[in-house]
Length: 74
Image (cartoon, rainbow, N blue to C red; front, side, top):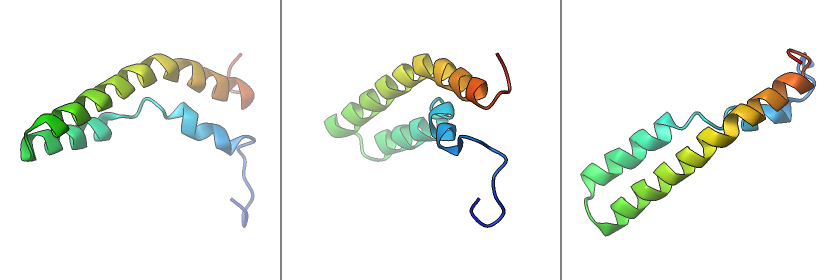
């Protein structure tokens, strides 16, 4: 971005816009659950599921905010 410049006005908004991309986190949590069954891995999967649920509710708003700030939608 520094060398060639950027056509994106607010690149810091890309992180919040991608907040719902938690499939890999869930896959890693489930893999850990099956490799190391026990109370700790169950807790880890529960925390991951809770975070994914919260992020799924938040992500439409953050994505829309990013698109509005970039001028792609109204």
